[in-house]
Length: 158
Figure 1 (cartoon, rainbow, N blue to C red):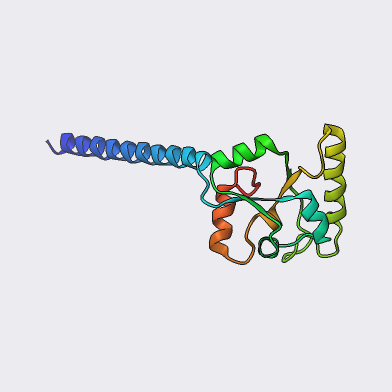
Figure 2: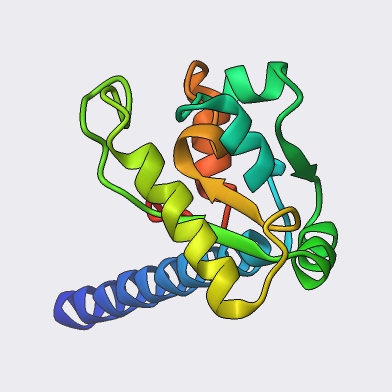
C-alpha cells in the first residue's frame, strides 16, 4: 500500500507542476500580446528638422523640455502616425557610458543617413521623424526608462 501511495503522490505532484508550467506559459503569452497591443509609455519621436536644430544628440529630458518631441500615447495613435508620416529607427553603439555621442561622431552620420533615406525614398525631409534611444527613452528616471524600453516595439533592448 505504501508503494502505491508514493506513486500516486508523485503523479499528483507532477500534475500540479504541469499545471503551474501551463499557467506560467499562459501568463507569458498574455503579457506578450499585451506588450504588442498597448504602450506602457508613450512612443517619442523627433522630427528631422528638430534634430538638426539641436546641433547634437540630446537626451529625452532635454528634447522633451525643449518641445522637440512628438508623442503617441497608444498603439493605435502610433500606427496612425507612422501611416501618415515616415519614421526612421536609429540603432547605434554608445561611445561612452553616460552619453551616446560625446564627441559628436554619430550625430552627422545620423543626419546624413536620414537625408539619404529621404532622397532614396522621395520623402520630404520635413516629414521624417526619428526614433533614437537617447532622445526617445528617458535617461534620468530608471522606472520610466524601463517602461519605455519595455513598451517601444522597435527598441533593441527588448
